[in-house]
Length: 400
Image (tube, rainbow, N blue to C red; front, side, top):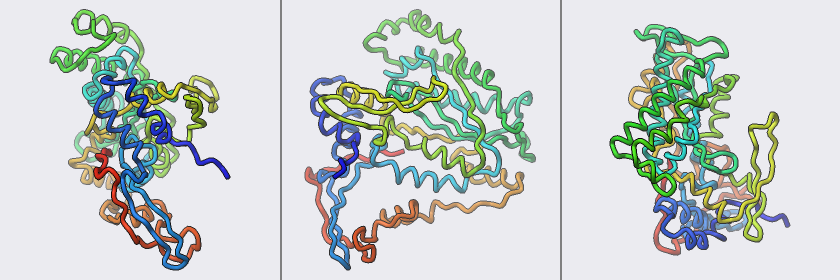
């Protein structure tokens, strides 16, 4: 019999308690909550129900999921629902994928100030894109886009960066014309990079002066303003990494591609290879290679857990945000105007069409029925018993 695939939850269940004891007070409340959620996900601890086929009598037990946004086992349906909601918002024009990365001196400050610095990252990236796009020397238009925060690299190290997906054009200042960018070219990345650098460094200085930043461990000397500015000095001289990937082949490719980014976590179960003798092996790619291919990396289990937990976001922090024409307040009206100017038919909004029942919603989004008996393929699975949570309490839901 084939061994069941390894999951992040298996690693946490085996090594989680030992890691808690070793880490002690250095573990935040949010990190402890995520560990507990992942360990209990789809186990009897969260309860569930028993189903039985009304034709062949096959019985199975479904345990509830934790629905935590950091759990590798709980993202498929959330991702499918997000893509479903975005289908009505895609415009019939070229799209670009622009990535903004912060240098190490800024990433080090972000490590201990996630809510503040990640928030500044979103704000300054949005201002950068909208300012350069509005400049008549470049595009001269009001644009819209959504941005997705990732905080990891392939080896799970701390590497904050923002993925932005942007239509290749926008509305003229008076709102009467659609202004398209040149085919295959959106905005000059060097201009974006330098404005982004100036805006974020200025914002960090403002946060320091407002006493919004904390400096712990090796960064404690940065509490002195002079040392803080010296720490950021190399970043002022460096070229910050901003790059635009080749434009998507078409609107549908936008959803297919970006769907892999929206609800991604630091590492997926599919990259795990082995867990043995206190070691965890997983696959990674070195994107500095001309032709990156998956390679194995083995870490001590405590180090794997530590790196995974680096990417736990502050409670309530939104890692997908919408700006400009795609801003939440006037999104439908703005996109309708864009379609009118592009000469495309209005799109129906699908959000209200999704069923509320989990099994019906799953089938609507994936095309896979949870009601059909997996054994006889003819009968229907009926719930015959509810399974109460063992602990009597449920894990707090934390989804984007």
